[in-house]
Structures are given as structure tokens and as C-alpha cells.
Image (tube, rainbow over all chains, first blue to last red; front, side, top):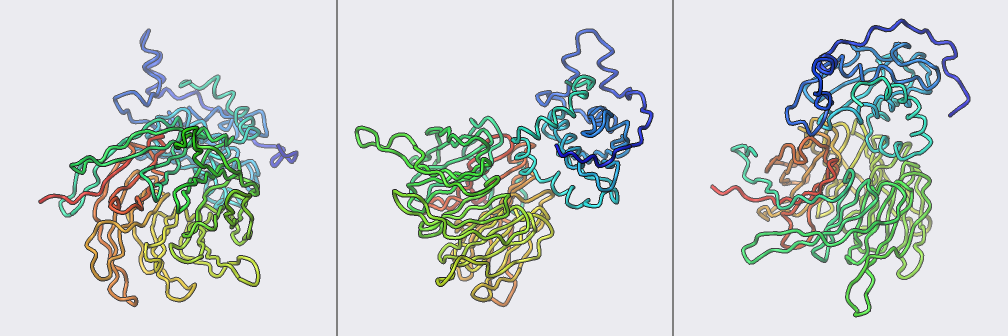
Length: 175
Length: 353
């Protein structure tokens, strides 16, 4: 991890309550259906997924520089997620336009969704247009699956990512 | 499977080969023997054999698995033209050279590593033998392309390191007859290299036009054209218009996601004047497309016709590679590999009327 802190004093926003999306309701409804409510690629019935469900998967990811979640820093939000069939596009907003952590943040979103969503979903991850000085480079890197695959074979980077995902593993519903 | 009415061919599934425990990245047909190799993020190489029964029905069976010893993903494979040697390119930044040992009875036995080529600083992404087998090329995220001289029973010697690309180099491909090397990169360009007899290998031309990463390159069997597949979702066809001059003469569109692989084989079309063979392409949209290409004169655009298309060839998963079988009589065989870890063999078959 580099020593430089790109945004030493971020704005922290009050967060919304977890959405009462369909999956959440399902889980609280009946007694022993809990196992079946997991998003499971082997599940025969292909269910649609909505913004809130995807948002719930990524909102608790920790910022690599701060003890805050991506939701608290307004790096991610539900309206920045668009879904069209099996295509999910997640836009995120780096806290500062020179944020050197943007690829790590984007990668942690990608890994979280890779691990949680059925494999039929194709995920595109982009920074909010105009929010980063190296927008094109960051986007290109995050959506190059070969670079992502290689990054995930890098033990140091994986350690950083696991750190960012720790909170989400505890609080996320689909684990 | 739905066959569109105007398609004259269909893609028939011959075999669906499981066994890899992770994404299957690449596959390569042995040019001399009925052997097919595949490689995966599971760090292994799997070998299969195939044969035709009396009625022309093809069957494919698993031969053996090579654990490789690579410490990371095995990204790409290349057979030497003699078919005796297999090269593996790995994210561990090394290239492995594999040969089949003879057992005590003089029969072919285990596949052993006969050499490791070290030099790249980061992930090695592609490897290719020149047409006469004397040279091996490799490329990496370290932005370099290396040319190695193949020295039998000895260390390979590095003949040149080209640092021309500004980003990762995704693929390398040799001209089918001459010692011209092409490379495709994350910097959206294609570069061509030749050997200067007085000096080192150097870049003779840069082909620009793609709007994103160039993932795959394939020369036409006659060597007059080069096809490139890109993240811009197109396949471009470049015509050789001078010794090292190339011009884009055709853009094949239709893929909805990144084109990860393009392959150009002789095919089994009608071998009339101007026939250029078959191109197959595939990628993130999970669709395999097969085209037949023809030239009418070298000043006119190429004509192309889609022979067939197969949707969800690896169910919902990305397709990472498609490769035509180069062996005589098997030019209608295609292999594909997917993120599902599956290796599939297909046969392009005329639709009977």
C-alpha cells in the first residue's frame, strides 16, 4: 500500500437504512427457506435482480483509505447502478478526481459482485463521467478481464481487497 | 439451437470437454498429430485426442493432464510446427517448453518440461512459433515482445526485445510463410516486426484503427491479410498492400461485447478464384460467428458472407478462444474455450436441403 493518502479528509454522509428489497423480505418471511433465498447460479428459476439488491451487495465495502464504507463516502449509490437483462453497469464516484485508489475500489466492487452474483451476469464498472482525471484508463483497466484475473493472482492486492470486503462479508446478506 | 434460414452451414457440437477447474483460456491443435491441448487458470494443460470412425463421425477423448508447475494461470499455448513441442505462456511471467519423453519401451510417455524461458517481468499473455519453427515469440503486460531462437537440446537464445507498445501486449502471431511478427496491444494498436540482418529485430509498421484493446490476431492462410479482434467489438481485416504496408479493407461487426478471439483457416468452402478461407470470431457475448471471405481483385473490398452463428456456445459464459484445426481433412473443426472451464469441439457442417 502506498503511503500517500489521496483524500485525507473525506466528507462522510448519513446512510439510508438497508433497502427492503425482495430478497430481504424473503429471508425474513419464512422459517427454513433461508438456504433457498441465496442467489444461487444453480437455482433453476432465473430471477430478475434490481438496483437495490446490487447496491446492498456493495454498500458496505470499506474504502481502502478510510474507516468508512463506500456508501458513507457516497462512492456508490443505488441510482448509479443500471441493469438491463444480464448486463449490470455500476458507476462509482471517486472522492477526489486524483484518487489513486480508484482502481482498487473498482476492483473490490468487481470481486464482490463476482463472488455474489450468478455467473450469467456481465458486469461493467465505470467511474462517474468527469469524476476522475484518468477516467478512461481506470475504466479500461477495470473492464479488462485478463488484467482483473492477473490482479486476483497477486497475493498483496488480494489481501488489500479482502480487507475492504471484510465488513461487507459480515453485513452482506448473500454470504 | 436455431438455424437462421439463410445460413448454408451450421455449427455442430462434436464434444464438450470438462475437467478444467477454472476458466479455460486457450486451446491449440497439434499441427501433425490428432492432439488438442487446452490451458486454464487452474494452471494445468489438458491433452485430448480425436479420431473419425468409418462413417465420418468424430469422437474426442481425454489423453492426459500436465500439472505444468506454473505458479499462476496458464494463459496461452503454442505447438511447434513439427508438433513435438508445446510452449505454455503463464501469468507467472515464464514460458514453459514441453516435450513427450520416451518410456522404457521406447513408447511416448510423460510430458516433461524441457525448458523454462525467463525474461518477462510480468504476466506472459501469448506465445507463438514461426512457420519454420526456428523462432518463438512471446509478449507480456511488461509491454515487451521477445523473439527467441529455438535451439534444439539447448537453451533458447533471446534474439530481440521490442519495447514499442505503450501498454500490455495481448497477443503475438507469425506470418504463415515469412518471418514477420505481428503483435496486438492494450494500447489499441497492432505492430509488425522483422529482423534486420545487420542489426536487431525492429518495428516496421504500426496499424491503427481499432478503438480499444486488440485481443487477438490471425493471418490469412495465404499471408496476404491479417485479421484482428478487439474490445471495440469489431474484427478488422487488413490487406497487405506493400512489403510491410497494410490497409484496413473490411470491418466485421455484430459482436455485442469484446471480441477475445479470431481465427482464420482454410475451411472447406468452394476453392474457387479469390477464395480466402473461413474466419471464426468469439468473445464476451458468447456467440461464435463464422464467415467466408473472398477477394475479387486486390483493389476492391473483400466480400464476406456469414456462414453460421451459434449463440450461447458456452451457455452464459464468455468465450476466450476459437481456433481452426490446421490439419488436412479437418479444416472444418473448430475448438472453443470458455469462462465455464469447458473446451468445446465443433464441426462446421453444410445444411442439407
